[in-house]
Image (cartoon, rainbow, N blue to C red; front, side):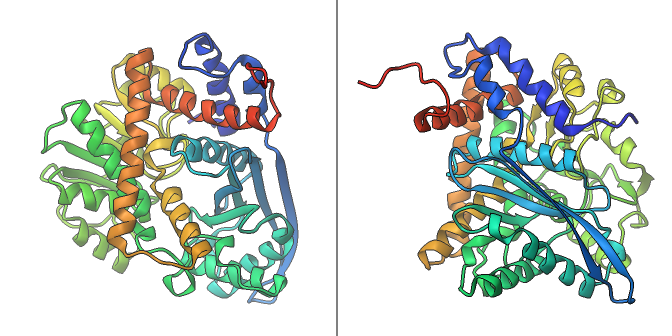
Length: 425
């Protein structure tokens, strides 16, 4: 499959928005879009770490702070062997758009460290996590840039990073990072937030597009978000017939008991040998004849090479950037509804925002309250996006981009960074 540069691909999407600049609902022009063509700040750090086996490794780390017009930047840190600066730039841009779609008082950022956590000991991961914070501590903090978990990072990694930051600063600062353990100021509901938020969005989309209560679902990716979205949709009565992880996938037309699959994976390390299921590849899963396809793994999964063969009626992007811009056009032409990542998977950053609010106030909410607030935010965002879809006769991604960029540009204009159309009276 052809490798797609996710950042350049997203810039193509931004450029495509210029044809909508004359619509009344659009409050930006072609010149305004230039502001989002490059990040505000890029940090690239390279540092040595003495590993558990006595060797010394040079670790490459990145933090991209894309735009902060609406507030401090916000975004996760991923550990992955293929992380590079182009990927992190794309993720930071998506996060900038995502926080704006949900109307959160944030800008967007993202971080990454190029390591393979599966072949790295916990002791070494802790050393790398702490050293990364030592490298970037002057550029992050509760009012500057607030990291969070992402691919292959978790509450424990956030705890190490928080602890290192507080040691350096000599003060408690729980709001400098989110996705923390509850014991260190984490929020209840954060572990399921991405999937729960996506489920609320899916429910609204299913109502709009008349998906039956027994619709079939295929979920690519069985990490935290993929596992939980599969579980939630199964509990809601949908038939989850296909699942996969990085080693391969499984299919059963009768549907899966997600708890059983999760227990099997916990025990065996993968779900590919789950009994009473047909083995399939990740590529085959994307092309199954199902009602709903949920890419919940990595970016660039549906491209111009396989998009024409996607048979789902609705694609719910729980992963970041799983559909390329060229694939988007093909899916749209084939009347497949794509609910974009910057809307569908925004539950994680929304509950991260709630965590930050709780840290700043010192008052913590019960899970029921967190999820009620999450539902309200997600439903409101879907309705705003869908209203633009109907008003301008466009797809959901274009609508979400327009909504987000309207808000970012308005903030920049109020700051005086862009030319406002109205004179100050």
